[in-house]
Length: 385
Image 1 (cartoon, rainbow, N blue to C red):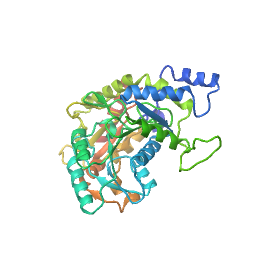
Image 2: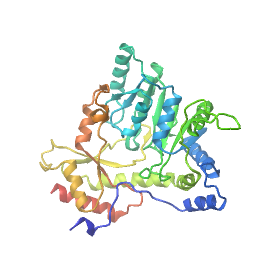
Image 3: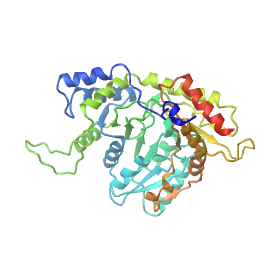
Image 4: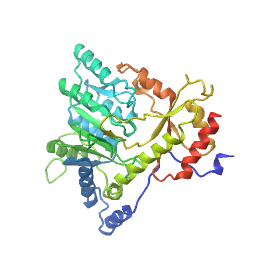
């Protein structure tokens, strides 16, 4: 059959709920269509309540949040910032915005996140070269909590401030505490493909009131306290609009429901793909004390498995899924393999390169039903012969 014979099944489409329009309509009725407004303050309060931090600044994107977060941590030209290689480019791009250099760290095989052993190696080596890292970015990939005890201990030992990139991890937890609040600064994304969305948007969270106030100042063009437009510092137009914040308010009401459904989808895939040759749903195990929101369900092919079809690769699976009008996507291509970062230092790299070579993300949207999940499985069965 042709791909157009099927409705398109997307990887992680927006899933609106019951009350988003109420907040948006209220903003229109009250003429709060400027960037500021009650929805913006309410959305920030909702995020604070969900994450368990006192201060939040809602922004135009998760990338903007990382950019401002690095500024708050004092990153500037000539500095180095420790960063996982296995992540989306938006994690590292703001490092370059500031004239600094990302130092890439390999993954560990359990959670696919930043490897503590490679992290220690990198810190010691950079310090030995007279280049103590200015900051450390920790990412929770696909919603899976990183190995926070080891990573945070290293950050404390070497006095390196942490920016926690929880863009994919809203609703994930470690030790029953929501992710995003373990660094000096935490960031979230509300892009259209995230577990909750404002169409486009992000947020910066912190326990430090002064940092939050400075982030808010910088995000509104760094306007000095004067009756006219005076600017002593470089600022940015990074605030989220009151309209989009209204969507966010409605979405935040659904957080636990959406996390529950993503986890159900992951378990469905794990159960129903278990018998397919040379394919495993991974990472399966959550670290002790952790809960992943399972933002995307991911699979790995095992070419060493004698039952794996010799021609099966993530790309052949992806192409076959496309013939059934099913969107899938390779795992993140490691940043140390990107032409953009060809000259950046890297510590390790084999683990995340192997994951990229063998992995694929499957449709995981919370609106998926049993029939759509079975459609994905049937297409994978066909592809694997």
